[in-house]
Amino acid sequence: MNENNDQSPTPRRSNWSNPVMWLVIGLPLLSIVAGVGLVVVATHTGGADSVSDPVRRVSQIQTTDLGPDEVAGRRGLSAVLRVEDGIVEVLPATGEFTRGQPLQLLLEHPTRQADDLRLELPPEGPGWRTQQAVDPGHDWVGQLRAADGSWRLHGRLPKQQHAARLAPLLGGSG
Image 1 (spheres, one colour):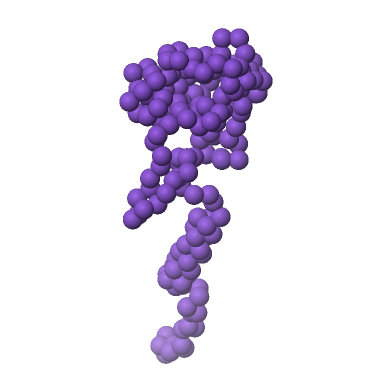
Image 2: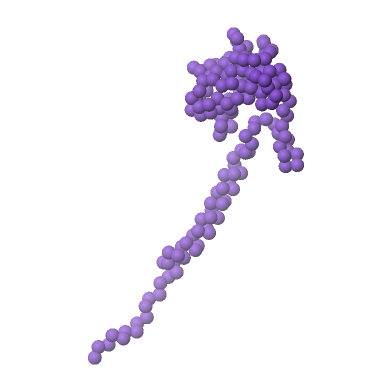
């Protein structure tokens, strides 16, 4: 007689050898770690403001002084920013600029505030110029203002370009 009715118990598998159990435990733990990582990154980076001007926050609304832009618009100011061969030059295009006074130029890096360039351009020749190497590998946001801050012009210097138009944001004819 053959006895194939062996009733030996099958060995019980551990829950940890089941891949579904790893998913049940692992995915929530992974999401917690990722969430903590995002919070750490968010708190250690700078603000999300893309405007370098001082702003006031009133009732959840950011406000900034647009007076210098209005003045530039009323005066019809515009200029050409030229960046090439280690020279940064601003040439007046329209309007009456006060000659003999230096201008302030802020070139903002698109992602790293630490790489922003703040330059003072003394009058030279038909415009204002200084020696400064500018990385052509990305766009720059330019802001030109009078030394006393009475007017302000804005513009964008595109990647691999050597010149950009600077104009007022408000009320300009230039």
